[in-house]
Length: 352
Length: 165
Image (cartoon, rainbow over all chains, first blue to last red):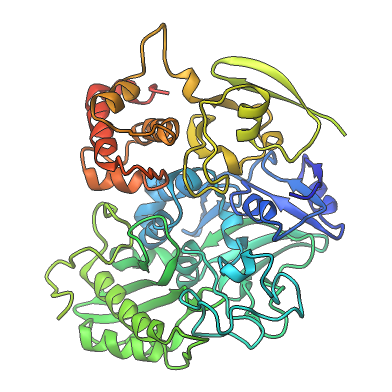
């Protein structure tokens, strides 16, 4: 690990000033950042430790029925907050399907949004990577592309965003509150992460020095609580990143879909909101054939970035299954294996 | 540039001088405070051998900067046994063969105590396995580990579970 200056600001204003210098990075729990620094993938010159800032570790119900989650709320605390999990069960399930219990105890909400891709070529300092070293090329192209993108990728980068949490947030119209030199602003989570294009090194719309202070979910997001699920296919049952994942949320009125939210994970460099699929679902009957139609719509633009064409059909099936799980109803208790496909859907022949 | 931090480790508060902000909590414990019970496996948050309690919750000490945890209360495997008697979770790991080579065991035990304290798994072995997935055991003692966790949980009555650590 390269040497760095360590700064511990007492206020958000001090933090923003300290992070304005080139080469500075914010430190929250560090569960991803320290890993990257140990591997020499990122080499910040200055760490601005925000973990001692007051007031950023609260989950607050808002007067309008929404909820505001401080940037330093730990993943585990949010997922196990009963009031939150009852109202936003797909978000809690997504959180609990990610990482391990120890990591969830440390990792923060803000850090989750800003975690880096797990593309192995990004992590391997000996590989060419346009994201790590702009202009150096992309060794993932023609390499092992099992975990790589099928949507929104470019010639310069085919990596995926690794977050589960963000997928559920994108489906439910979350907003990101940030503070920076120019003051406070909010950004829809759906547009917070950038697709790679020609500048894969830029992963979000944050300006240099801007800091996430909170994530908000609108009151409308809680209206899906009875039919909201997260489904994640991975190489092992627990403690693995998604190959493909989906967050599905429905409002069903006498068998007809009154409203639908859908987002995919593991398919692109951002959580992929599937609005076309949502349009297909609106007014349709909550049944398998319609879910399959929605899945076709969600993946209509997909193309393999390498030897990963299997992910397109896998993604269609994950979408259809997530919708089926959502339609069957949010379980009363968090499943023993959150978001796992190894779970029977009550009353439905899973593989029929 | 030097830094000074205060940590309470296994009940003892100490002031520690750090000459370098890069020191992880794991390296501080092992290399500077001679508390080598906490193990360094992968050093990248993947294996769980370095699991300790910080402010009452289990975390990976390899991915924690010591300097950032100024003021924290740390519990390591060395702080479990009281008055010559092993902690009930340590007893359970022995009784149920929850180990073979023993390298991952301190992390497994700290993680198991965290699991019991968090109170999410109940008597469901599937939930225990899920909640222990951040601790790898290359000897493959998982069956015994799961049995040990379930047995220890039965031993500790609900009122004392919050205080097991």
